[in-house]
Amino acid sequence: MVNRKIVGAHYGLKDWLAQRITGVMMAIYAVLMAVALVSGAGSSHESWKEFMSCGLVRFASFLFIVSLCWHAWVGVRDIWMDYIQPAGIKLVMHVLTLSALIGYAGWATQIIWRL
Amino acid sequence: MTTRTLQFKIYRYDPDQDQKPYMQDIEIEVDATDRKLLDVMVKLKAKDDSIAFRRSCREGVCGSDALNINGRNGLACLTDINSFPEGKPIMLRPLPGLPVIRDLIVDMTQFFKQYHSIKPYLINNDPPPERERLQSPEDREELNGLYECILCACCSTSCPSFWWNPDKFVGPAGLLAAYRFIADTRDQATNERLDNLEDPYRLFRCHTIMNCVDVCPKGLNPTKAIGKIKDMMVKRAI
Image 1 (cartoon, one colour):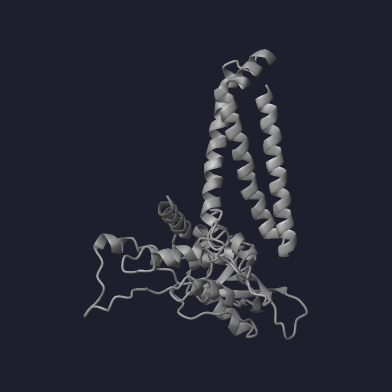
Image 2: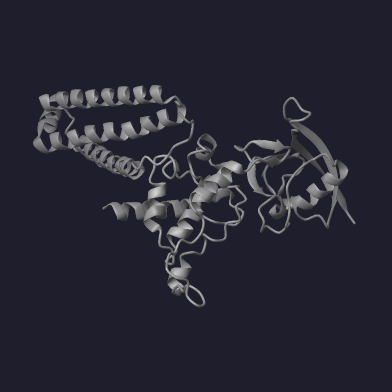
């Protein structure tokens, strides 16, 4: 195969936008959590458990976990794109990263929803 | 006429003679008629004619004397010699991130390759009018701050994303030029131009650190232009 630099993958905007939107969602969640803590939701284990098991908080926590993993995917993928040049190793790292993040997302959701 | 001595440390490398680059110490007497760094460099060249650097218009228009001056990219012809701190040698290096041909002269092939990749010319398939393609004053206003780029490469060679991916990331100078044509109401290839940049490397390697804005000798703002390209892409997508 001719060794040419090829660009034009056409997913730049989607990932850039996703990283910004997920960043905003995580920031909103962090503020909500800070407000909850200040207002005494974390004063005891029971009150914290009650707060975290509320439907709305579960929903927000799930969104946060998905946002975190999606955000991390774009960031880590950028690192692999910059630092790993052989396409085969890069693809393997992408797959491993995706697998780990999807696994973490499922695991975290299971923990949060079990409350 | 009062004179003073300026000390320089100049990056020297002649691939035909030197094993590796080195910094040469050199002093030069300057007087009140020497105002800009380029004036002094011309004197340095007279003292040691083996020093190689590019220069042409000596008034900030051609962009050929771009250098790394005391760690910061800039044009020698626009840099005031009184702006240097007293008692410290002035460090002159070639623009970072591009291959050195000799001393302060870099190979700008990659830089211009990226510039050409954005098709820096008006694309309009309509038959040309008798006189000129007109724009409203408001539409023309949008091109201010874009067309003035002199392609000195100070911005692109101060950008870590360009250092890392010079073959894939267009770089601030190229992207400023890209927006110059995307913003031009007379251009008919807006979609193709946006498609050309819709890539994780070509445009989105810009992480908005704004080194380009910091060093541009013409006071232009490539980061703002890049942001506007991203805005247009978002508007197109949603």
